[in-house]
Image 1 (cartoon, helix red, strand yellow):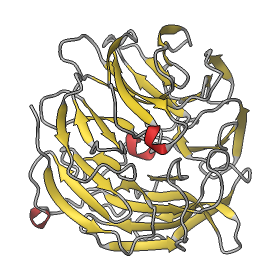
Image 2 (cartoon, one colour; image 1 turned 30 degrees about the vertical axis):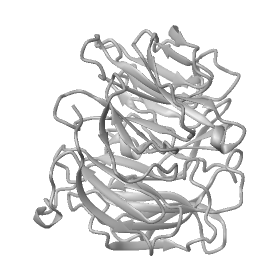
Image 3 (cartoon, one colour; image 1 turned 135 degrees about the vertical axis):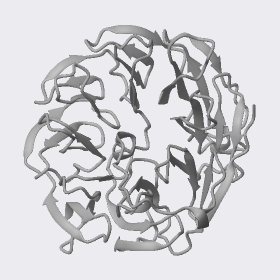
Length: 426
């Protein structure tokens, strides 16, 4: 049954640097998630050279600017790849920091640790390499009670593993993909790292590799697909492959041109286990009005259930799993940046529209989703250069919402933020 979204508020972004990307986190311990808008430099070809952050601006849900660090750039950089920034309590003091790679006063790129509440710089560290800032991944390589290690990478070839005080622990050269994903699959208290097509242990040793080497890995999803307590890795790129924790290929789907995003969830109530939603870049070259992508759904044995027969242009779609939207207990597929005439939409496991957001159909509309007020209710944020629109699955009135002043601990999905969504569902 189709569900209309509840509009919560609109925030004007006229005073926010153009082409900013959003990350979410409770940066001031007030029990509400804030929005940090990040702008990058212009000029480099982001297919080969990673971004760094030129300006970071913190907003609350009422649209108040809490702080701004850096200098806005005109023209700004493009938003088609990751910016090196996360929100996380990296120093363990009980407060979230904004960690990012920015230029210092000497025009040197540094790994900055900014106070989440004020934006003031707490620490700055030199990078291990000029291009070690394609993204920031937080991992637990020391067996502590929470991740405190930093993984940095260049665009496609090398990873640097760092301590929280920025000592280089090890490096790894290979086809490392877009976003290495940390997860302790063997329960030994240390994260293993799925780095492109190589599984690394905490010391950077290759445990196993999989046979997908023609292109890079676009996305990684860790999941218990069969509901039996065993973990699988679903990896998208030149194919869609399902692997066990020893690197054995279990199933594969070769019917896509390029699997760009993966979203795992319980999308179908009539099937056992979980299903795998994917985004295929069907036509990505040639005239813009001819480029096209499409969503498709696999069962947990990589068998095709359906595939979108898209006729309208648009090839920059991002899909993610969205939970707790309508109280049904089912997971859904959030798709945005669709372009053409397709607005941001939540789909069920049969590709029925559950919710369509009335914000236009531009490829320049991005989305974030989380429980903004820490109550377990999912909110969806849609934004472009001009405005932020916040919607919820329930009616909310900002005038009636009182802060709990109870800090929201940053969940992994938000401190492993990436433009190439992959996650875990175990």
